[in-house]
Structure formats: C-alpha cells, structure tokens
Image 1: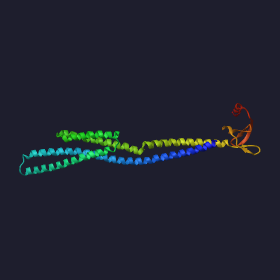
Image 2 (image 1 turned 30 degrees about the vertical axis):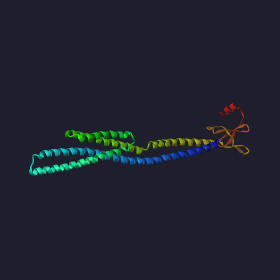
Image 3 (image 1 turned 45 degrees about the horizontal axis):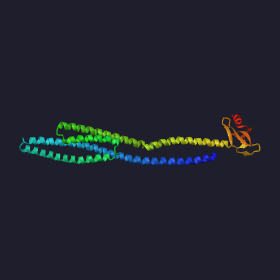
Length: 288
C-alpha cells in the first residue's frame, strides 16, 4: 500500500514539476519581450525629452533675439533722422538687414511654437494618465511655458533678462528630471519586471523545498527497502513479514508470523531470537 501511495505521489510530483517549469519558462519569455519593448520605450522617450528641452531653449533664445532686434531697429531709426547722404543710406541698409533678420526670427518662433506643442504632446503620450513620473515633467513644463509667455509681452530689457535666466534654469532642471526618469526605467530593465523577480524568488525557494521533498522521499524509500528484508529460517525458506518496530541504533527489527515475534538483525536478515507472543503493553516493554 505504501509503495502504491509513493508511486502516486511521485507521479503527481512529476506533473507538478512539469507545470512549474512551464510557468517559469512562460514568465521568462514574457520578461524578455517586455524588457525589449521597455528598452525601445526608453530610447523613444529619451529622444522626445531631448527634442522637448532643445525646443524650449531655442524658443527662449529666439524670443530674446526678437526683442534685441526690435530694440536695435528702434535705436537705428532714431539715429536715422540725424544723418544724411551716404551715412543715411548705410544706416537704412542696416535697418533693412535687421528687419529681415527680425522677420526670419519671428517666422522661426511661429514654427517653433507649433513644434514645441507637438513635442510636448508626443512626450506626454509616452506615459500613462496621472503618471507620477510625468507629473514632475508637466509641472516644470507649465512653469517654463508661462515664463516664455511673459517673454512674448515683456518689453523692458532688464525684466526680459531675468525671465530668460529663469527659463533657462528651469529647462536645466527639466533635463535633470528627465535623466532621473530614464535612470529609474533603466534600473527596471536591468533588474527585471516585478513578476519576473517574484518568479525568480519563488523558483529558488521552490527548488529548496523540492530538494527537501526529494530527500524525504529517498529516506522513506530507503526505510521501505530495509523493512522488506525477508526472514531467514533454518530450513532456508524466506518470507516477507510486516515490521512492528525498528531500533536504528542497534539495527534490530521485530517481525511477526504465526503468533510469534521474531527478533532479527535487519542489516543481514538473520534471525537472532524468538519472543513468545505477549499482550501489547508487555510487548512494548520488551521492545524498549
């Protein structure tokens, strides 16, 4: 009966191990695909961060260039009334060149405003709604955008310099936030997804537990093999008897047949003594 139970248990254990191996393999394959996709995501969001910050910096500098050109044109037009002849013509040429540069900068600003909005939207789409990581990007972007809006309307040179300095400083902080997000995501790729880490830990402890089970099964199988050693009689016949008790320290074993208790050396199977059948309590005392 014990052998049948042991065989059934081993069969179930083999099926269980096969199922566990299949699950671990599936998780590992999925982890590989997720890691590859996450790395592609990291590369894409890195490009979007670089594009966003570069356009914010360019927009800030273009606005400063715009008002610098406007200021120069205003000053030159003021000086134009005091000049005549070639000097006046030369000054007119300078004004025309400044105006051409101003038109170019203003056109570039309009393009950059559209590109900046597109770049921010593209960056935002990399993150899920209410993502804590992107919240920091969003707050910093809103602050920079408000400073850029103030640069559009501010005509005082000193205030524009202050606004430009603040905007560039916040853009630098935005770069640091972006680097921190990329580093965090890279650590996830390097260490693995939470499901993979959990499977890794479970696999380790499952292996330890399986080793313990296998050791227990081996010990039980060894005990069964020892208990099944046949009795040897003087006539040379051998019979397998049920074991009553095994004293491992002395290597003795008691087995019963025909109302008698046979004391034998379980290491060799030789009968050492024959004990008459007694009540259970007396038999236990005899065994002890």
